[in-house]
Image (cartoon, rainbow, N blue to C red; front, top):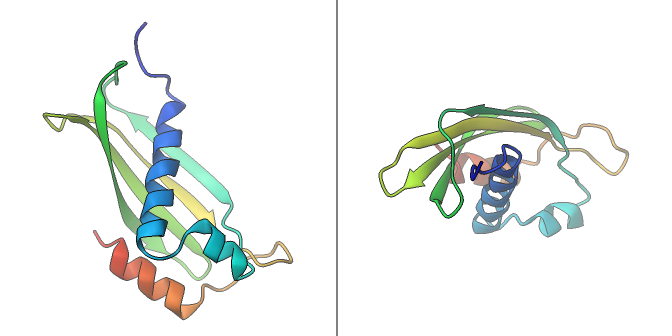
Length: 119
């Protein structure tokens, strides 16, 4: 069908999230070094138009909600050039400690996230 498979959007979300955290000085390795993990607990995508093979796309990411131990990130995938919206979506991640239970987000992480992922 020459259309990008729907699951590829979640890979693009993950790449955007990884690069965002790295740009904030919070690569996953640093979060893990501090004794935390951030499992995905919810993922959603709404497909608006197809991406086709060889299309160039851009993924925008912003903070949707920052809870006591969770973060919701919102994504928009657009076609470049032109800016046609292909997909919107979100993921929710929970900060958990080494015991596997939700952990309060440290203040310095909260500050970096709110300053670096503003709407």
